[in-house]
Amino acid sequence: MPASKYTFPCVAGIGLRAPHYREVLETLPELGWVEVHSENFFGGGAPLHTLRKVREHYPVSLHGVGMGLASATPLDEKHLSDLSQLCNDIQPVAVSEHLCWNAATGFVINDLLPFPYTREALDHVTRRVTQVQEKLKRQLLVENLSSYISFSQSEMTEGDFLAELTQRSGCGILFDVENLYVNVRNLGVDAEAFIKTIPADAVKEYHLAGFSERDGCLVDTHNHPVYNEVWDLYEHVLKHLGPRPTLIEWDTDIPALPELLNEAAKAQLIIEQCHD
Image (cartoon, helix red, strand yellow):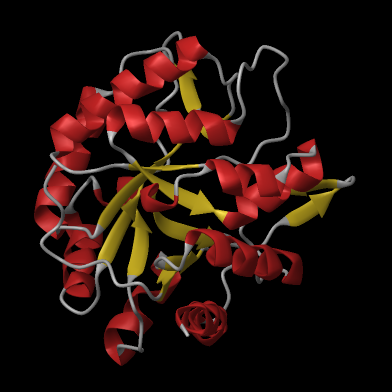
């Protein structure tokens, strides 16, 4: 599959959200790259015009939240067509989606829902990832999921599932370090085993974010700075799998741009230390 004509730099970037569009375009801060949610630009108009302007100055990664790769219902052809058109327009350095389901019996659920990691599910997701990549004519990155339940029906771990999915489909991995930490705390996932299972050459991007805690459960809310425990895990991951382009996600209670840039600077320093 052909790659983007633009290079994905191995530096830190930020999730670019609407409150910062104007400031970023007016001040052009030093940014390695930005990532946006794909679905926000399917309608064209002013949002897409803004994204085109951003693309003149920064590499752009497209991160989807609505495809539902593991849903049992057929892939939404309109969604896929809109994403393909956006890719052709923006020429992103990467395109990613979550390893989850979000639709059933005609209903679409605005959430990223987990599923049992079975052989049947692996066959199903492999077919769907292949369908997406054939439509987009580019590699798709699949993100590990933060979860609050596990399934007794699972026949393998999420890491095993992702590793085999990359072998079968040729997709890449978006390794969300905060999601792994949430699963370690909530579900007792073995972080070391997960890291060792993931093929390093399949990892193309990292995500970092801040969680919330509710009644003893960590929730992937993306509304805090990255916690020290996640920074420590990130350093550990980089030592084992190597540095990759790294994104700071902040989706609610969005701070002033300088605070977001400061978080990216922390990630950049760790990336540079790993290169030394």
